[in-house]
Length: 346
Ligand code: ATP
Ligand code: MG
Ligand code: FE
Image 1: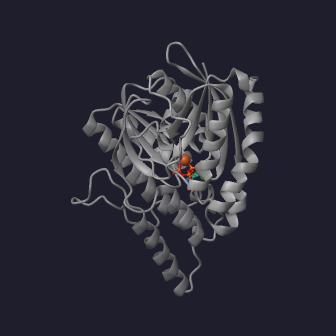
Image 2: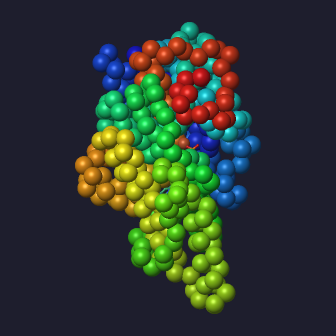
């Protein structure tokens, strides 16, 4: 069966197509994405009104591109999945309205699914079926969470999350402090390659003996970077941008990987999936690879294009919930900007 997936929770309009096999396996057929990121760059963050308007303009052409890419027609689609939340209310509404229209016109079931769970489900398009129990570290612009996955279309439970900023948000804020472009992840990743990760001892948030084991905090780290940079500026010294990037990046990768490996050990799972935009970070995946190998944990990181927001991840999750026999959403489906990760279908 062919599942069409629509994503519009933030600044990417994504439409993807997957095939659900009789054995429950999923195969990527196409993945078209239009991003309004350039329109937000000068504001240093996503402007909701601009994002909604861009989704409206991009939805139909992106759907056409996805169908063309798969060599399919709309009438070949057997089910429609759409991000029902979490995300920006106005942005989500555009995707949900489009999905309802397609589902109603085609007379096929509609699944309003969870964006965060989609970031996990996408890995099955790249690396095949996930084991029955596994751990996922979701690191994106808006979220940083450790998730226990017990059937990707069936049960996902949050075991830890950030208490303040998301990891990607910290990258974006530190980039701003250093006058690097938005979004901050890619330029910091690039600059860090020329810097010394041990140059500055930035704090590792939430790693004290009384801190929650699986929660994260990145706001103190961002403040520490800001203070350090201000101190150097006051002293009239030039900022060693590469060293700041490398030291900041090391602090983020250290805490994320240490907590993920610890959680995998304690929950006795042997597979870790890292996904979300920050999973594209070279040091995060490098350090995760080292630490997972040492702890005998299988590490799965989807390719960067699938880690950032896209429609294929929503189609993949739609296929998994369909295969698990979840009841479809009603055609009255509305978006929920605060949809919790354990609600896989709304
Ligand atoms: P969410 O999925 O939580 O709703 P989002 O849609 O903003 O949020 P993504 O598109 O998955 O998230 O990821 C965007 C984030 O990833 C940005 O904060 C960006 O800086 C970060 N990012 C992208 N590439 C890298 C990289 N190489 N290193 C670190 N961070 C990166
Ligand atoms: Mg984005
Ligand atoms: Fe996302």
